Image (cartoon, rainbow, N blue to C red):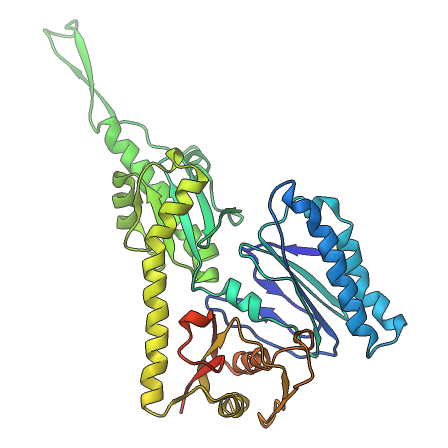
Length: 397
């Protein structure tokens, strides 16, 4: 059984192969249904988390009821078995974050711990319901924080409401001693003799002060850290990187850094003096204006496309464009549910007026098509959407 935390954005098998890359792009390879999607709000601490496994069992029961409509009992039981096993895993329920996503299908079962709340929700459909995952894992609203001193580092990943430490990739040193091993610099010492003849008194003095050598070691340490974070974390996540360090370390690290994700503004404080809550508040204070500007730029991009007749908020037109691969970027309203079905070849849609939210979402299916054909998908809350239809598309042509 796989428990996937925030730094790991990959699951494969079953109804689709999904990879959350630098951008919230996801690749879909449709397989045999049914695909079971379960979302649940969870809690980090006792006693709030005591009710989480009970609510989870109720959601699994709902999945069973939905499956029983179309599948015989002998097929339902194996699909629910890993869900029921998870419900009884006491260690798991003591290590949850703010939300949970569980995806199951023939041959696959994946569990995602989320840093954001999600509403309790289950879907049984021909494909996984991924809109909440895309929203949580997309670049907008998320960032990483590099806590840096001249002796050690820590890496965090955060949202508006949470900041959690990330396990460093294998090979990235945690401390200067680990990075440089026995190669730390020593001050150069020169012996000079002053006095009369060979018996005159000797005086010792050093050339290359200790401060200079410390700076050399720090620079070498920072170069190693910068390379490791870029190769193993920043490029994989695509997230902005906020540096928390004393002013002198900010300057030295930025001199050597090759990381294009490093934000120009940092927090000039000793990270060791910041508790997690204070670091979250200060980090979000720096990151939020950049995120807001990027979101506004995205909406402006849609407005420009609409003015050039290269954009649309009409669901039927967007669905046809998705099927033909014409969409370069798609905006979906996180809070709008559109029950219905789409023909993936023609893009023709059939509204399902009798269908409930547990039967899937047409907007989610359109998003899958766009991602499958190489487009970008962004899930926004209603107040940020430029349309009232729940969808907005920017066309390639």
